[in-house]
Image 1: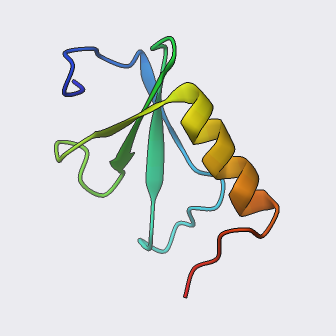
Image 2: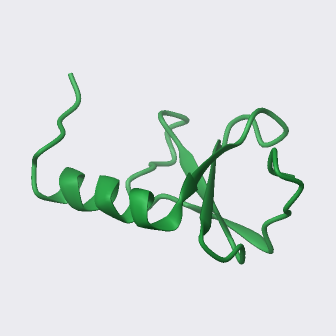
Length: 70
């Protein structure tokens, strides 16, 4: 359940998450205008929530190379 009491209908793991137990991110589906995000290795741990448009802007910036990781 997210911090605002909403429960995603399902979780989807990032296509970039491998099977090697590394950095795995899942997003929650089924909540209008909100994207819940969690660590798939800790499904009962904290959930971050983002406005859908902000999440879209974040992914676009990643795809365009505007954001990089070390």
